[in-house]
Length: 150
Image 1: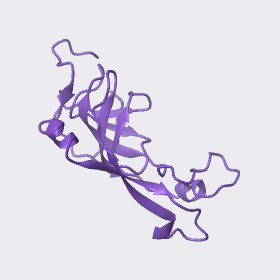
Image 2 (image 1 turned 135 degrees about the horizontal axis):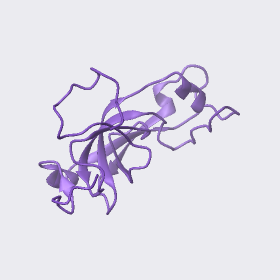
Image 3 (image 1 turned 120 degrees about the vertical axis):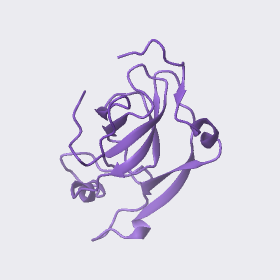
Image 4 (image 1 turned 135 degrees about the vertical axis):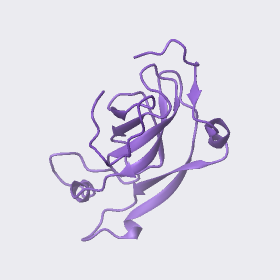
């Protein structure tokens, strides 16, 4: 629901200054594991954070789901889903907080579930985000209940 009193670009306190000073981090698949995955099969990369454009949000990952299916995504073979490409961010679902919003349906402080992969930050146009709870509601500790679409 759009908020008519909203600023053109909402930003969590202090985030505008932070964007120019910190880098996001992401884990990419560096090599196809032979057997159990090793640290050398992955690479940590730093990326510049930028402000989201109109209709987008900047997300900060708080929780990352690590699931057995991810091992199959590391192999380059036929499966029910496409393999992760070498050099691409590892697949994974996260719970993230919106730290900057230029999207009419999402506010700073909202928590969402999304398939962003193994990264600390991401920009989204809102597609594929499932809202867990809104900032205007009482704070409910994440993990105390499953996300419920609102």
